[in-house]
Image (cartoon, rainbow, N blue to C red; front, top):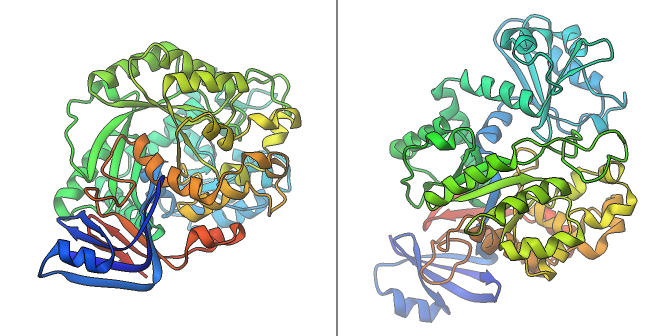
Length: 510
């Protein structure tokens, strides 16, 4: 079907900024742009005209780093985001029936709790000591489990002596699991979910992404099984979201195929250099301000990351390596300096001034999550006010001509791109977040944020056919209720998506 789509204003791209009044679409691709009259002349006859008279069109958002499986799972389970006490968490769990299988929840943050401590298995056992309970922290690097869950997974036997199976001063397991043990437990739960349940959750995640105005994603830490389930879904009913999968580094060596198409492809491998600031497992070159004996921890060795990178290059793919702490970034840069092509660095939350030149020389794309500047309001507690300049230095990245891609790390952050754009532009200054108030020079403009969320993310995914509506590109766009470049910064998070098109087809309408 051929379409001519018109709107009050159509942003074709943000760098350079190009606008027009109409676009012509044929075969899911933008074939003509310009005035309505020009596009009509180029498109010929038998064309359906769609008019958005008072609305604005722009390229669809590309979330370069998110977890589609976790997103589908966590919008189907107990929501613990924003809870202010362990008692509130316990009340949520106590409402669940005593009979049945696993009880799953996600989104708590101990820094919000009035008890000023981490939850424990004793807390969970008080309200549920029969069904196994697994409650993941908001950063997806830690969780708390009850005794039934620990027993069913055999964690005390499997991880005896591992510091990521947290113990108290008496040597008793607290129920908190971090990093390696968290990954094992999270994978255990995923493995035991049937394919039919995963299909339902992945479809739910796809629909929610479209509703938010997301047209393409980088699916990080994708398992081979999840990719196979998505392949089955694509054959069965098609996809409304372009998915670029980055296979977990532990499975990548066994990958036997790399074929894909415009809707589903394997783009690379995901590796981990460290953990998270929230769980105090991000690897720092200095001690944590609020835990002076702790410098964080390394996840994968440099040799392991290098091996994954070489394997990816051999398959003409990328490696995206998680590095939140500045020491982890040192390690990743040391690896990338030995590899033969440009790759991705995920998060780059803390960057020292001496590291920018190395990043630039590696030609790495930094895939960042601006909403961390608001959600991680405790960042200065971790690193100290004297190091505020290291935290999320987006403007300095751009000044150093380092390409950045915006993303959410969903479900760590909300899938809504406008919350991310708002955070990139304001850094929580309207909320009085200390990080934003002390590092206002690291704010970026709305135009820069939109470029990074479209063209920048397309670069991170190595897909030149998305990210703009220039002629020859995929017709992936969203319809919004106002002009974002004319909106005050405090209104950005309230912009509404009223329609989403992928491949020249409307996949969601308000």
